[in-house]
Image 1 (tube, one colour):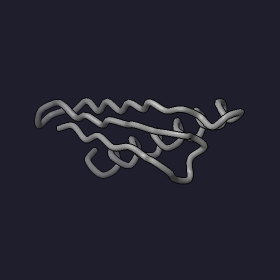
Image 2 (cartoon, rainbow, N blue to C red):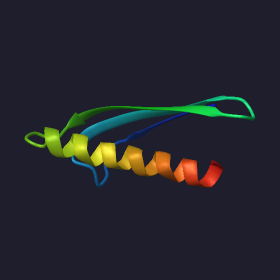
Image 3 (tube, rainbow, N blue to C red):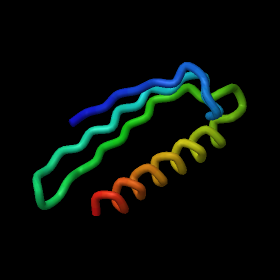
Image 4 (cartoon, rainbow, N blue to C red):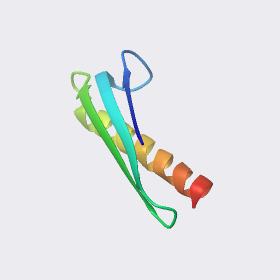
Length: 68
């Protein structure tokens, strides 16, 4: 399964964000791959990376808690 999405505006310090979340595997285990391509707002490169890393970590932990 693959899900793609993009933000045209939002709470993140980025001018644009395109992301893909893919899940592969079987009944025993799964591999989740989450890619994010973004353009940080001017002067906010570090902040953008930190915020998006936190979003990904939180999202992946949520998946792990929900589906084990």
